[in-house]
Image 1 (cartoon, rainbow, N blue to C red):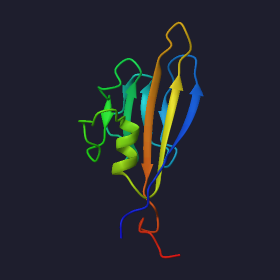
Image 2: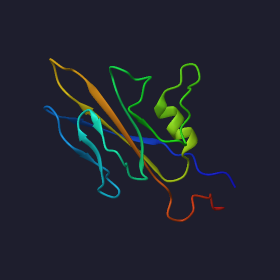
Image 3: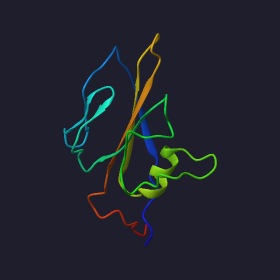
Image 4: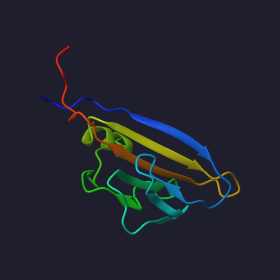
Length: 119
């Protein structure tokens, strides 16, 4: 059976400057600062990018295609490719004068195997 459609949950966080950022599922560090991806990301990390270069991700999991269709975002591609489980994107807002956003997405597979059960 096909896997359930997974919808991205988005959480916005306003931050003042550079902070480390951790996986909400396993606690592993994903960003050492606002602009530095760890060398060995955890299995849950699927995407990191910023508002200055949205089409050039800092990190992109191999399950997500690097080429997007017309009018498609990486959020759409993550939802399409990673079905079943939880997709969670954090948007780290750095207020003016920088005004930059960092997008960090994670995926957690269903513990029960991610197959639909008949109701």
